[in-house]
Length: 178
Ligand SMILES: CC(C)(COP(=O)(O)OP(=O)(O)OC[C@H]1O[C@@H](n2cnc3c(N)ncnc32)[C@H](O)[C@@H]1OP(=O)(O)O)[C@@H](O)C(=O)NCCC(=O)NCCS
Image (cartoon, rainbow, N blue to C red; front, side):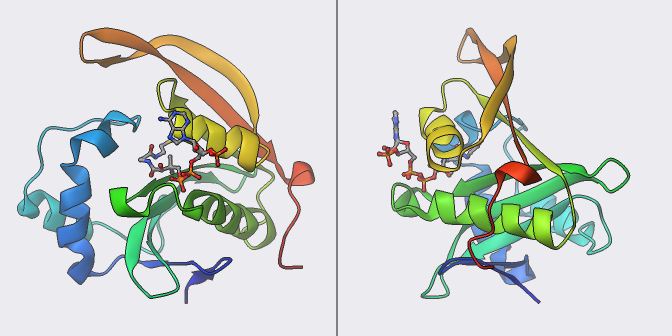
């Protein structure tokens, strides 16, 4: 199965995708904008990571495909908490597919899936404050709300940078496909 959005879909990660994931994992401009960090990774790290993926996990990661069936990025829904009905989401797009409106389609598709298939009630994401495209995407284009700022949480290129916490509740979300 896959998760269908508006002219995109989210599908399971296959072994053939690992070279692309390896490129994204070592791409400095993408990684600077993400919250996590790691040392440079090799293909072996990538295979080990892949072997540990499970469709039963409460941390799910997907390849995003566009209409032409090209893999354009990654999306995730992690820390799924069915007891309290919440989870965190995230995404990244390959550089050549940024700035084309895919970000909104991905956030909407994963939100529809979380609220209307998994029956979650609240989604959260955290963003490094220098990531203006991501803040614009979630706040302006997708109607998320800013909840708080964790000051000087990240350290990047000699500077401490704030972490912004955003969320969306099911009651604030309308399913574009219903
Ligand atoms: C963040 C990301 C998902 C946004 O998706 P996208 O499809 O590229 O989104 P858009 O291009 O529509 O950009 C969103 C908005 O940010 C704006 N923007 C782009 N670059 C900007 C910049 N340097 N400064 C300020 N705003 C910027 C865009 O103009 C757009 O607003 P607009 O439609 O009103 O013009 C994508 O750029 C990406 O994958 N970046 C790298 C990884 C990443 O940051 N992931 C998110 C981690 S929280």
